[in-house]
Image 1 (cartoon, rainbow, N blue to C red):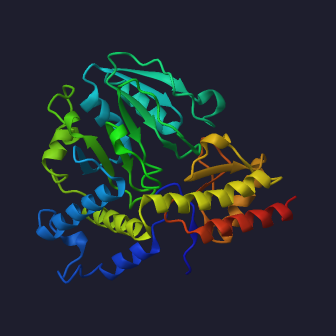
Image 2: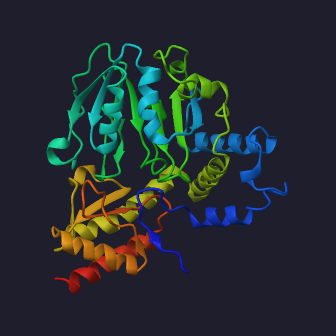
Image 3: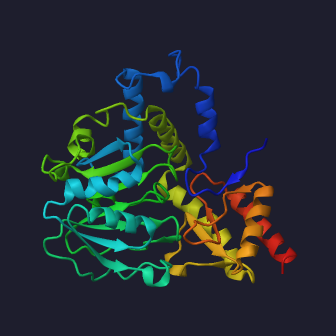
Length: 360
């Protein structure tokens, strides 16, 4: 069977060349006579894979030397608790609510201290990013938290909040490695890898070293202490070895394309193809204010739930998979992550044009 164009929001499409390399090495990695799945995480074979993956990520993102890179389990959702447990020294934190995942992180943080929602775009169903230039940030707040790209609603920050000197924490799960970011502007930036970087099972945290201390909230589990993980070099317990190996291959794939500046250019070209069609369509409409449109996640609707369902079904029959919108939003959503080829977006737009003409 031919591969489909997979527009899933995550787990999502991976580069074909990466999958082919992994398939070739499945039974015998570099002459070691075993699969990476079978290696001891304490072996030199695997620690070399881990160290190389970290260095490639540092190269791609320009991560400063005073930041630790941690490959962790539990997904981004576990960080919703780990972050306040490790960073809420004054038990006060400010959250900007721009979608489902920021809301979940905020609700989790409220269990550990005085977490406050200082801005929200809920009034317009999260179709924009609120003004973050002059926020009401408490003098003794521990950090300001954002979700930088909103997978469900298809919005992204076009500028970072003015945190008034407070540490910025950002969930970048669905825009991870899609374009350059200045890591030094963040205290902690993290992302689940299953959207843009690798197979589900890892979250990568990039944390400024001064935040990694034993001064955590009472009751913080050993596994959730950043210091536990940092001191052990992400090897406190058995990590998801194979997933890290695949992430390392994706890092090299991005490097081979020219790095994050080149990746951004490719992503902008892909997104423009789809947004240009939506802006000129009489049937399909994008749901996000233009200024805040995501390069990664593109939600759209026809305005008719039955027509939406017909579109999703017929698209699937044509090899365009996972276009149904999130259950909280409805309609359609095309996630066009790094590994989605330009021809995949072109195929989607061609199908949309055909569908519109046939159902006008």
